[in-house]
Length: 413
Image (tube, rainbow, N blue to C red):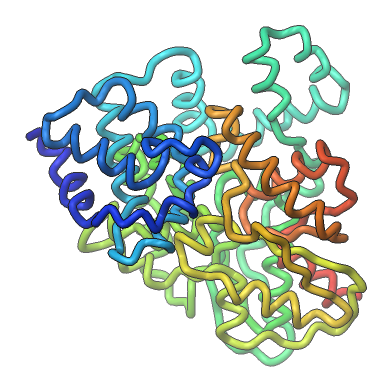
C-alpha cells in the first residue's frame, strides 16, 4: 500500500457503516445514491486503499462531489474523522494528476497566486470592482455557458472605504477585561471589511483590547479542501509563527472556515499545531463565554440564524450565536426547518460543482422563504455570499448579515 493511503485506511476503519450519517448528507439527500453518502465514500476510499478498485473514476468523482460540510461528523456515533480523511484523499488524488483542465488550473492560480498575496488580491479585486461599476461584467452573457456561469458567480466587490486596513491596536472601551488577537483572514478584508470592523468594535465595546498581529496570512482552508494539503501546511506554519506565541487571552476569528482550519492545525502539523489551535475562538463563542455586555439599543427585526457548517460541525459551536442574537433588545429570533445543513457554498464548491451547489441552496432558500425573516445571519464569508445570491434569486426581502454586524448596530443605536 502507498504510504499516503495508510492514514486514510486507518480513519476509514473507524466507520461501522451504521448509516446514521445518510440523512445529514446534502449530496445523499439530493441524489439518494449510496456512493454520494459519507458511508459510501468511505467504502470507496477504503477499497482504493486496499487495492480493490482504481482511484480514477467513481472514487475520485465522489471525493470532489462531497461538500466537505462535516455534518456527518456531528451525526456519527463512532467519531469518524471524515473531514480529515477527505482532505487526505483529495491530496492523494492531486498527487496522481487525475484532476486536469482549465478549471483546475484556474483554481490553482487563484489559490496559490491570489489568496495568499494581499496586495495582488487587492489589486485584482479593485480591477473587478471597476468592471462591475462600469457594467462591463454584463458582457459575461456572451461567454461560453460554463465561463458565463462562472463569471456570474463572482461576488460584488465593496468600495475602497469598506476595504481599509484595521488599526494594529484598538483600545478597550470602558473597564478593560482582557486582550485578544484578531485573525483578519485573506478574503474577509477585501469582501467583508465591514464585518471585520464590526468585530473589532464589538470586542472593544465588551472591554477587550484588540491587536492585529503582523505576519499572519491565509489560513489554508481552501487549499486543504481542494487537495493542496502540503501548501496548506506551509500556510499553517506562517500563522503558527505569527499567532502561536502571542500573549493574548484568545485568538479571535469571525470566519467559520478559517476558525475550523486553525483549530485543526494539530492535524496538519502534529506536535506543534495545538499551540495555536487550542487558543482559537469564534467571535460569537468567545463573547458568549466571557459574557456579553448588554447592547444599549434596540433592533426591531425578525432574524433567522443559519449555522455555517464549519462552525456548527467543524467547531461544535451552535447555541452561542443564537444566545447573542437573543440578547439584542427588540430582536426576535425565528427558526427555519433547515438551520444546520449546508447552503452549498463550501469554499469554492459553488464554482466547481454549480449544479449540486444550486440544488442544495434551493432547499435552504425554500426553508428560509417559509418564515420570511427581515435578516438572515450567518458567520462565514462563503455562506454570506451564497445566501445573498440565493435570497436575491428567490426574491426574498431579507438582508444577509454576520451576527456581529447586528450586535454592532445594537451598540450604535
